[in-house]
Image (cartoon, rainbow, N blue to C red; front, side, top):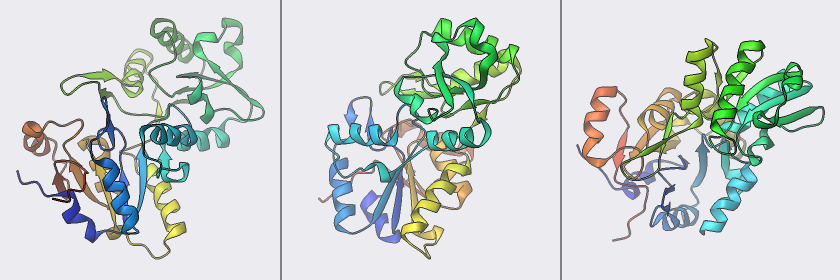
Amino acid sequence: MQTVSFKSILSQYKVIFFDAYGVLKNYKGLIPGIEQTLAWLDAQKKAYYIITNDASRSPQLLSQSYHNAGLKMITPERIVSSGMLAKEFLELKVKDGIVAYLGTKESAYYIERPGVEAVSLCKLSTADMDKVNALVLLDDEGFDWFDGLNKAVNLLRRKTIPAIVANPDGAYPVSKQDVGIAIGGISWMIEKITGRKFIRFGKPDSQIFMLAWDIVQGHFPGLSKRDVLMVGDTLHTDILGGNKFGLDTALVLTGNILTEDAETRIISSGIAPTHICESAVVDFH
């Protein structure tokens, strides 16, 4: 399997779409050297956006988390979150009542608006279940799993309401070798138990790429998909999603896929990236 340097392919593209976890950061913090990549892109006047399945908090708070880590150049306008799609869906489909959710208090940003009450499932009383008009899974933190998952199952058994998962990822890396269960994986279990199907937002679905594409075209009229590169660490979300949308893709080996497993995973999945890079770090040596 042949890898290429990330810098060597950038001259082909005007806009870069980055996945977040595994590309810009991991369980240790920022990927070492990623600051110089973004600084170099700014100097070259190449646009970049973060396309993320992270619906744990608003784009403003996600941006602040990057600022706290030292990436001051990542503004809320550069972040396209799957939570934004869930928010749009709820605004169109749920006019009033309670939207119950699993996630942190910050993730309720994607639900809250006048006339609609966002209530954590763990705080939902049995008496209020009849007032629930949708269930949204936003994050794997912020609730007691035993209580929250049981309430989610019984709510869907009791009521025919939209069930939404704003982050379809099944797992996320917690170390170089191990993963944790993500909220998308929780949705699979609830589906199996209840027989209900969740509405999913985020990569690899094309809708998140359509949202990002609309944003980018507003700034770069006449842009072609050939001018955009999707950079990710996961074949079944980042790379598959980018490929389906017609973008060139770059798989980096700083996240979900170990270097020694990459070739086997690509062949067995049939998901082929346009480029394979050790990382998204621009090397000046």
